Image (tube, one colour):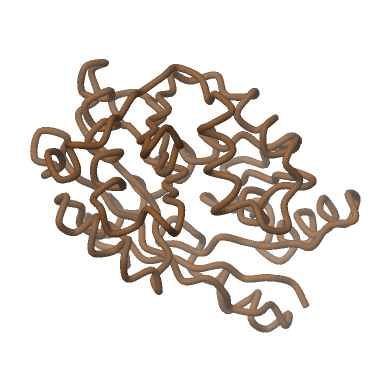
Length: 257
């Protein structure tokens, strides 16, 4: 039987992952109880992964998985599920039995905004925060993360946002070299899109971006920060640990064969 602590963690994980889905809005979304079926052609695959956050007793789990598979098949896509403490207990094993590959281990991390240790490193570099992504911001993000993606499709993701959002940029010799964005959603602020051009790394730009985003969120009433990071991204882990983020939960994905 789940403990009160594990139930509370699962509920918070689900809430933060759903905030993430609103911060990275898919083009097509269908809600099945607590499940979010998503499709975003041309965008990063994880933005279209199924969020499976509740299991209705009236519908067997395998049938609900089948409905999600048919949703993705209808768009010519591949079914992927995000597996976290918020997922039904038997979902991971069921998908493994159907031949789904286990991929992309991730860490969901949080920090109290008043305790986040971000700031002065790299303060000699100019930093700004805007309410929209200008061309310099988007060009830098896409240069770092856009391989294999559709530029216009990713731009439309930002256009679909309906939450307050801040876009931080650091410039070096007139060139935008480091960016990130923050999305405010009911006292929580999510950090997304952190990217630094290769030739500008190691100069504190990313920490300066993180500090600017935290300041933007704090001035607008946020109390907590959250973010997701790849388990194998050691540089990002170091940055976020030094900034006061701790792991709330690990999660991974299952991808259909």
